[in-house]
Length: 246
Length: 157
Image 1 (cartoon, each protein chain N blue to C red):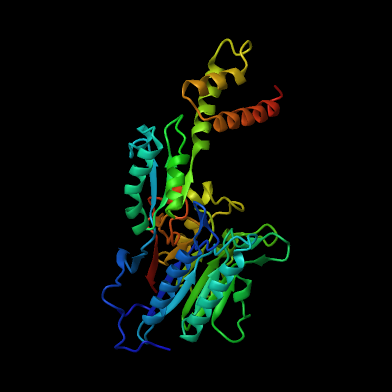
Image 2: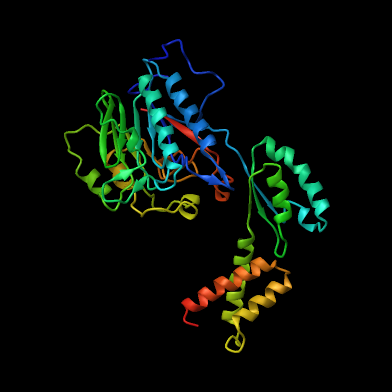
């Protein structure tokens, strides 16, 4: 199907590739699901309908030894996508950051610095242009050491700049029912996505946000949810990924 | 590399429309099964052989769907026989005795707070009595005493 820009964003989040459920490591389940999503993004990438792969945060905690395997998974997938000509955007989530004062996080191994590929790692508020005419506004998790004000990003958006085609975040959402991401996976601090300001400034622009493990649509924000049921509190979740026409 | 105009995605991998221009693609994820007092009669059994026999009936289904099992037994029931049988069969299991203990502790706290004779009766005695009433396993009773001690110390009692 031809969309306005002829682009589809393939969005997933909250892989938690280091997770352990009932004593069993979940890397295999998460890796299979992530590779399946990447395969879809590659196989559906056509001239009239290009794919854009978006990861909305929380690859892994930075402290368990299992985080290296998670980083390897993300790196492998980013390289696969890049080799197939599919741009990929990777936001840091509250679980990815290491509060060491240097801005370290689990997605660092992917970051080629934009030199040789179209893999972009986003650890601060950023606008990206993976395709001509396609601007993606990113709100990664706000670490203590490298804080920013999401409201100010919206407020200070230059009037001469075209509006974004997609808004991606890994922030909290005011009023949403909290789930396992708050009870079993609590980490970091609460900084909220400025939903009202975004909707007022750019009505109709799709907004997608990670962090929450139950996939849902809340106050106009699409939440992909996690790729697997990771805790008892997620027994009733229906893991999925999203495809958004841009 | 582009798939080309003729390289359409497989028909059996279609998204479900959830909003205008947005589709969700379900992921075939492993289930989490909660085995509690309301979903299983295994907790009424006392003979370990009977328990093993009943649990053995669950195992093929649990393994075939790759389930993770949470055992949430009624108060006073030791779930370890069930858990051991499932673990032997390679089914990932998590036992929740602590939640049972936590529930009792919350009840104890509310009873004591509402009790007029709380100054003459130690909370430790209340815990022991209630644990005895429901035949709570010793490990759980000890756990209750541990967290009670911590709570009382923290409260300056």
